[in-house]
Length: 127
Image 1 (cartoon, helix red, strand yellow):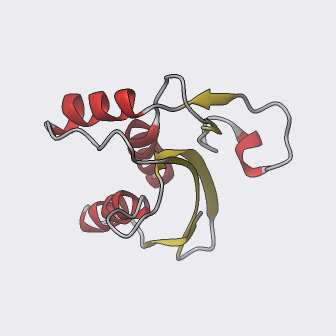
Image 2 (cartoon, one colour):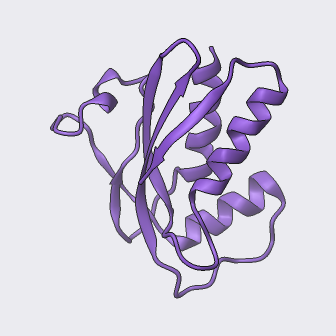
């Protein structure tokens, strides 16, 4: 259940459409093929700054648009709990820069879930 909550929130954070780069976006609890990076059954999705800004405005009330010259990148997260359960998520995010780390929202979600007494989740990689 904790992974369903985590990846539902994560997908909302990073699911964008538009006319820019294409990334695989999937959640393993909905698509077991997400675990396999070589699986050809995964469909890629286009990501754009406009849709990213629109999402932040609608869901978080953030009205400051991301700069138009910021790059987007594909992101892959590997999360485990104390029981050794591992799950992988894939999506789109602003590229890592000196000013912004796309992993920070994921860390915030993990911290929120821990405050909700969800078993400890750890972010092993965010590439």
